[in-house]
Amino acid sequence: MSIVHSDVLGQFQHDNATPHASRVATKWFQEHSSDFRHFHWPPKSPDMNIIEDIWDALLHVVEKRSPPPRTSMDLLTALQDSWCDFPPGYLQTLVESMPHRFASLLRAHGSPT
Image (cartoon, rainbow, N blue to C red; front, side, top):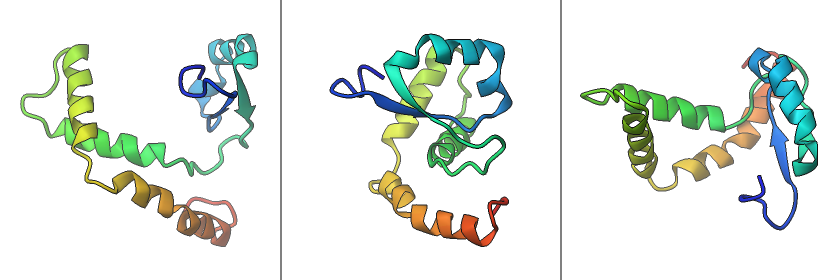
């Protein structure tokens, strides 16, 4: 956080998935609470974070690699290569999709869309 948001406190958001709410994670959040603001999100809420789309796209590209990554360094290289291969405007398209995503969520009254 201090690297990305060196001038102000960054805001950390997670979706309260079980691994994020574990004792270890909760303790870490408490110990580092002065390093960032924590955006509280309702438990088991729909995941509206576009990072999930990005992870999914990276996963599909890496899974198609031949040969598949065998080491952590191979995986890191594959992820970096895949990130660089995203088409221009991919991330902007995801950002611009947010109004539609929220409208769908509202129509579903907070249920999965």
